[in-house]
Length: 395
Figure 1 (cartoon, helix red, strand yellow):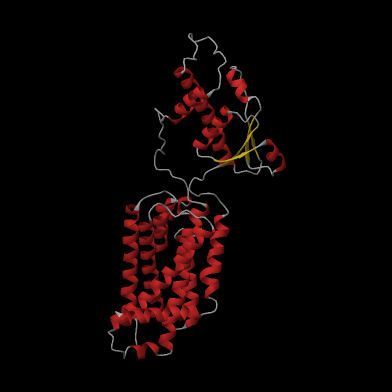
Figure 2 (cartoon, one colour):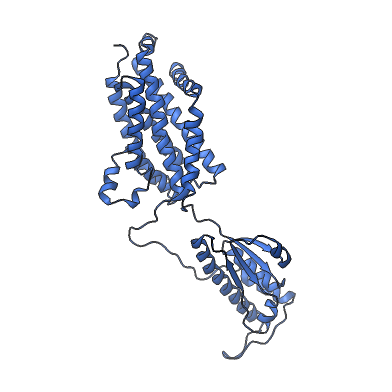
């Protein structure tokens, strides 16, 4: 086992010594993630920023702002003086002076939601709906606390008398706001429709898959081709190792190469670009490991059947781009006709993308990646078997 690991680490060292490796394995793929991820939405539903300018500064205006926070907004509260000197946010809700007095007297009082023209339209529409919900919840809490204190009108059409906002009322209102909702609504999509993965949710897994195909395929295939040309492979055949052990060492080196590429992109995507990675770390690791095994076996196949470094580089690059394109790395397979989607699953990239999207775009658990992982491993075993059969340690 130690000799197998030595062979594997030797390939990693050769990769690290190559001068362009920093560009091909770090700079270019991270740039791809950022560029294509920023071209669309698609992240897991984000918290929406909302600036609340409280011109009233009363208990009820503060309670209304808290109700907005419970709607999932990321609230920034500003005084009117600060708001006048600050840059206009995407969405700003202004609670006017006299808000509490108008509510106490039973008079209608408007709140003003200002939305910038360049703000995200979907987020702004969602914000409007949640502001309406916060208004209704505040009204419900007012009614509940009024009943608790005996302030409700006796007859249905009788207007409510003005009430005092004192410690007793504030305590009753706070208790009403803290009660769990009696009725909730659960919404789910009908039929087989689902949102198309986009933005960072598509860009990160697509870049991982594509650049593992390209970099592991080229570096792994070229090293093996070079070793055949320079008769390094023939000398290794004289070591006290079986051909199967030598092949295992070379396979492990390429698996580690793929894992390194994936780790770089996962860390950059998560900590530099804020990408969402799903709820199952185990499922994500399983997909990456199976994909690494597949591209490692494919690299050995290229090294076994191709005869020169130039031939290996050109063919591996072209075929990797083709497999990535039909497999959904350039665009989601959800947007192509059914026959093209089926044809695309000839590529192992399509199964990897299915698994990534199940975890990242649709929030599935590890069970959703079982079939794609099995198929990826099947592809890897096929490439490995053919490559091992055709590989010649000496001419």
